[in-house]
Image 1 (cartoon, rainbow, N blue to C red):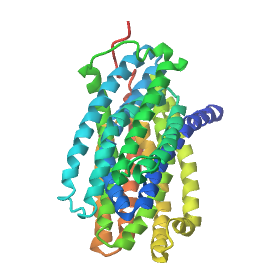
Image 2: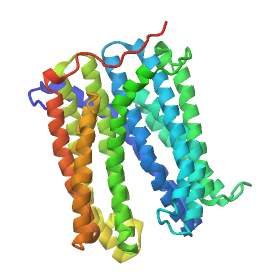
Image 3: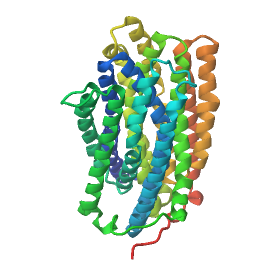
Length: 463
């Protein structure tokens, strides 16, 4: 990344990236708060309900990361077309992305319908299986809505319009709070559904979100010129396969990183109740912190893609990435400072058990240590997505997370008996390796000779 950029121009780039990223960060925080609301409602209903929702959520989100990541191919594709002045091609591309999102939603719906039969072979406690099955069977109805929502959201992100992500994210939160309570507890004349009712409430919320987004895109003047819904286009394999070639490696990469944390939780689950509770507290806090650099990384994807489409060369591409890096280092410094200074107080918010709070506080110190490598790796991955460089980052993620992080964490935590702290040291090592290799990959891919000369997505224009 070049440091020779004229300061005024670079400051403008930082400001543009910050304005673009702020609603994305807020939208991700809203998503995190939706999970928080689910846990609070389930916990108020009963321990069995909370356990069922916890298991169901893990089984839902891990496979969901693949279609979510796959659809991340849309923002760089749209931003490159936008930067090249080819907005007439955005509408046809978006319609093909809608077909892809529907197909991914249907596949995940079928997967979740069958996954309830895997609870027993996975060793889930018999008393937890009914609630987990009910939650999965309830939330599966909202899966097609979720994939459609991501498609619409990523379209807006690619066009530098991220406000809808924040508005519809918090809108969903406002819907879920009363509806989830009513369908879980049986309030307002509705039957008590427990975990299944909460899953159904989540599905209803997702469909309301996507219908609201659909109306917005169809009526907003901002999108009139792109004629998003002016005609019906059948699925075209050429365009869909182009999105898949870029997006599927992203989906696998996101799933591998998420899978690392889920596998870590499962391994810690073998250590005891105290260790599991402490890990859950620390990972929840770390996940909320991660929403900030994740939002900045998505904004960087758009800015890098736009620079490629506009033909700004290596200097423009690296300026966009460096602006994102400045923002991420600033936000991660703040997160690390908060975790270092208030780790005990934060842990105390979650529990009154002094033993759990003490262990969780020590894990939050380790979370502070991985704020910088975590921020750099997600930012570098976002910048690479803007270049549509996704296959090599997938292999980097596999090596860093599963070749380094997981074996080291399991060896220290279980083999040497270091417990959760050993597992978390493995996480730090995996993130550090990913940060270094992703940054080096971006330095290589952003060289003048390696940059694409024009957008790689070509679709049939509207008549």
